[in-house]
Image (cartoon, rainbow, N blue to C red):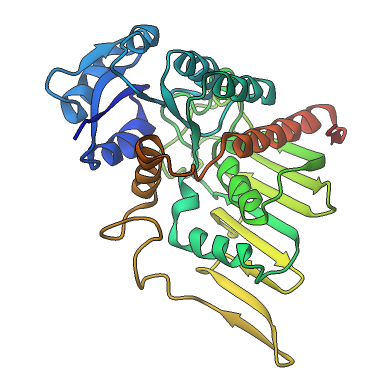
Length: 359
């Protein structure tokens, strides 16, 4: 069997915790090249995950020059997602880009343009779509069990869990804080469930209230207030062209006990659903209110052969199948671009104090 030769660009936390371990489990995949601006990180990744003669680079363009590489994973800080992805697509590579798609909607559009011009596959790393609860709820939505979903909440709230490593606190590199980091996951889930990608208007607020505090009991140790250049919480009110409303709430640090991350709540004309205490579906039947909690521990995950896998492993399997077998992508880049469009609008509304309207 001919192996899928993969190049890794960016060998930091998300590469080591998600992408490379999942790729390592794919028998038809071999990781042949690793690039990071810190060479030691690329060397370490090559030794742990690569083939014996895997190459190491500090310049991603040298990796892209290898014609034997057919797939590239772009796992860099957000600022670099767009131009590295565009270069990779034009270098005849299929690209898995980690979320968010880009810092700005204009950058995301350029990525879409490059994918269309080259005919290469492009997807974005929204692995929460592959959770058992997400797949079950998506199926229920597709079957019309909720009816018309006209109100939703996208939940991404942490009480005290500010990531203090890498460049998470650097606005220039990342484009923002929890909104673009974890809010992007909950918004993606919500839009996907609703199958609604036509925003009309956004009002947003962002706050830097707790980032300058010390001894804040953070899950990953104290942060440096001097380096905390992004928001610590953000909130968005989104209306869609069809009249639907979405409320997005996200924080790394917030004085609240209402803590939920990468979850959605949906209200439809036939039923509602939420992920706040496992997956719950609520409605009225025979003139009585009901709440159903499906047993998601039974059985495996749809479209994955073998043992029950972690969401990132299912994501990887679906991605490699799309490359090798032509199966449909689960995360379309056009969908991910709308997520970026809305996040950017929330930041813009927060900056100007005005609503942002879409054409």
